[in-house]
Length: 187
Image (tube, rainbow, N blue to C red; front, side, top):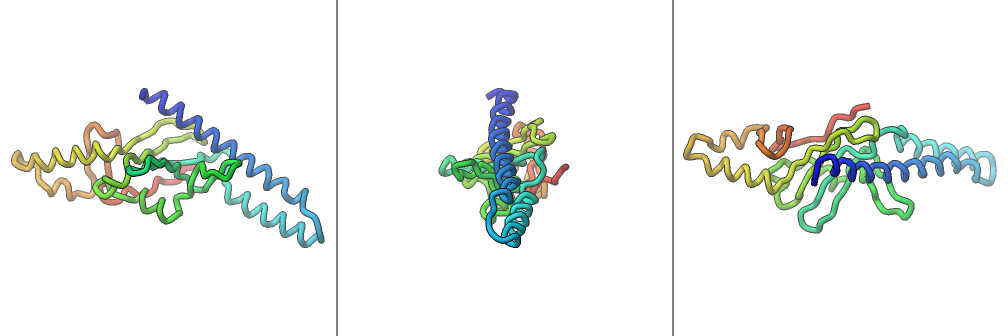
C-alpha cells in the first residue's frame, strides 16, 4: 500500500478514537449537572469526573504513539498513554502501562519474531499523523539470518550482539535488538 494511503487510513482511525475521547470528555463535564442528592454527593461526582477528565489528557494530544500487530491471531492494538473506548465499550486504544502491552512493546527484534508481525510507531503533530515507521519482524528475522549466514565473509555474531543494528530495507530508524523502549512523550 502507498505510504500516503497508509497514513490516511491510520489518520481515519486516530480521528475515530479522538471523537470517542471527546464524547467521553463531554459526558464527564456534564456528569455534575445530572448528579442528585446532597451537596456532598454532587461534589463527589464533580471531583470524580474531574479526576477522570485529567486522565484523558488534552483534546489535541495524539490518541496513540504506536500499534502492535500480533502474529498468531491477526489482532491489532493501538497503543497510547491513555486507554480510549468507543461508545459500545470496544477498546480503540489501550494504555501502554497494561502489562501485556508494555511487555510486547518492549520486545527486541529477535524476541518479537513469532509474537509480533509488526510494530508501528507514529510520528504526530498533535493528533495528526506526520509519518509512520514500521518494524516488520519477518523481514528483520530474514535480514538477521542473512547476516548470520555471512559469517564466512567476515560478518560475525559480534555484530548481532551489539545493542543496536541498522537493518537496511526495514525502515529509516535503527532497530533496537534488545529493548526498543517507549517513545519519548512530546507535547
